[in-house]
Image 1 (cartoon, rainbow, N blue to C red):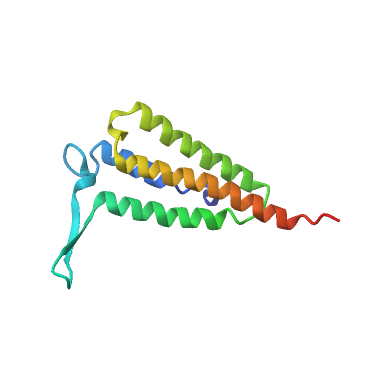
Image 2 (cartoon, rainbow, N blue to C red):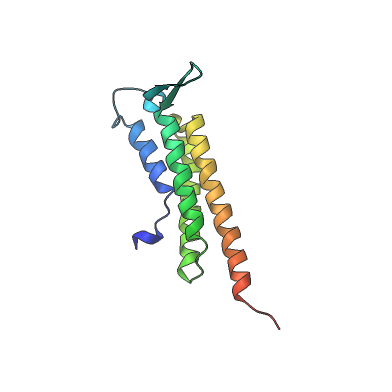
Length: 133
């Protein structure tokens, strides 16, 4: 059952947990610097919580694309659940003041890519399973 859960729900839930203050004090925690590393060039590279969230979402997108290569009856349910997550992103982006941020928009766009890639890959894989004579 958990294998069919759309993984893009994870960044959605994490973002909302950050909005209610579970990652720290008041306000927007996504700009907080997690760590900084001095570079050989003399510059400093900093990783914020928002950067980490995008990296997590991209890694989950990769796994979702791999999941979409399976052809089974349940893959349609996977695609519908991913589409439902995308609708959640759109509705929250439009209606919740705390979701009106670039980070949430990028996460929603990654969810859109998940839906489009999932349908495209599945259709391509299903076309190879059918042989027409």
